Image (cartoon, rainbow, N blue to C red; front, side, top):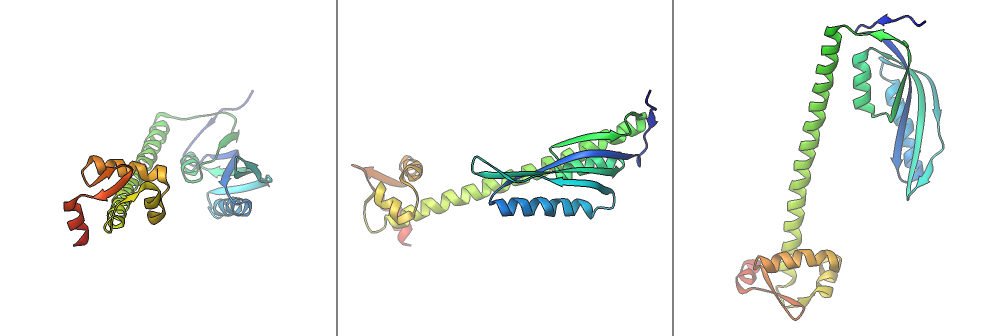
Length: 203
């Protein structure tokens, strides 16, 4: 029969942890994983007892590798932080095998988890806003490049592709949008500026 331990904020947890890295080239992936483990080793609240690195293997054009770590985590809060900071693919708690949490510890656990989830949510939203901003800027840049390319005369999609460096199929999306918005016109497969747009482009 296992003894039930009453956990407190500094109850040490012995764990088996797997950290995975995916990317390319192979050398970069292997180096990144070792740097990741070195970062863990520098944290005084995370003690690595054993480490084992797997050989990198190729999967669908990318290289994947992982490290299996046996470690001691100083406290339940630190375990939560570790999960968010290092994103392990799996965690197995070895010791203590049984422990109980009082109500205040459960409340602290949930509040800490919620706070970190909120931080992650804010980061994701910020990234999405930045991506949307970059996307709009890219679309504007491409459309301006098309307008400038058409200043000196009509061009078909193939020639516009060579001038702009954008693949014909991808370019068609922008061209169709600009025709719809009356920025340019299309006749018999050739695109040209509408008079007002020509005047604006030359200013």
